[in-house]
Image (cartoon, rainbow, N blue to C red):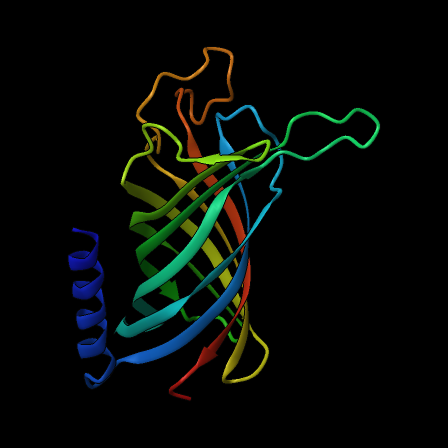
Length: 202
């Protein structure tokens, strides 16, 4: 099933990339992520975020964009050097497809927002050196994206994005006193992505 989804996505983007009236951008960034609800605090998990974006103008100053991204998410427990404790690292990698609306009315800045669907391709829990899988982690993830791009040159831009899960990524009861997102119990990926974009068309 995973291979079918991956192959379908690659074929779709290959066809779109060479269609007329479409633009394309390469994306390379770093994720600073956490998991709301896991009892760990802070954006301490560092991971890569790479992909490609296909965009097209749908109205004056407005673009519609599809992306195919490989995003390394999760969480990491920070150690107190004065009071060491067992380590914990959650590594959740996703292949995701965001659909974005971009506003092109500003000269240097392009704000955008949108929704995404992703599939989990790596599920690893490193609990003080004991490596296994996170139980009951959902295969699918649905996310919300909000960000902006500052255009340094016509071809190069700096990008900042905030992303979080709309639904709990773990199908399991959570602690009643755990962190909540919009009043709901559960586990939610939350991350900031800092990166660069390279426009292939300009």
